[in-house]
Image (cartoon, rainbow, N blue to C red; front, side, top):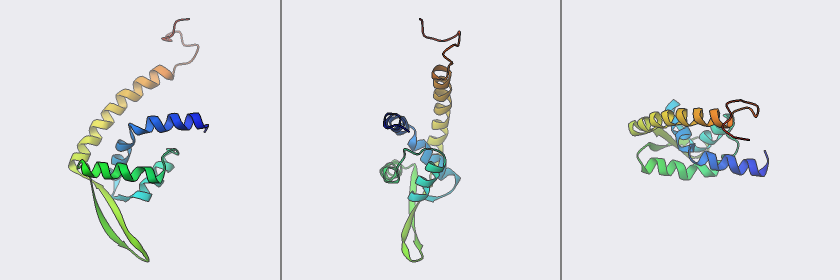
Length: 122
């Protein structure tokens, strides 16, 4: 991915990354590195591990996630995050908004250059 495209992807992700983290923690409790790996596996390659920790802290302060520590054999304890009831409600709302926005964006920028319904006027 070019530097320009990476910057564009990063700007787009800022608005939706919270919902992605909520969605992943709704599947099961996860720790930070595991969340970063899941985002990467989903194809969100511009999201760096270090960038999600401030977001996790913010989601926790807002009451959308809660965390707990578990001992790890031969390693420091891991901090796991779980979604709260408020986080579930926020995720449901974010999914609704995402479907509306993504559909509209795809219908607009996903058009073929030769589409007769194109909104541009030449």
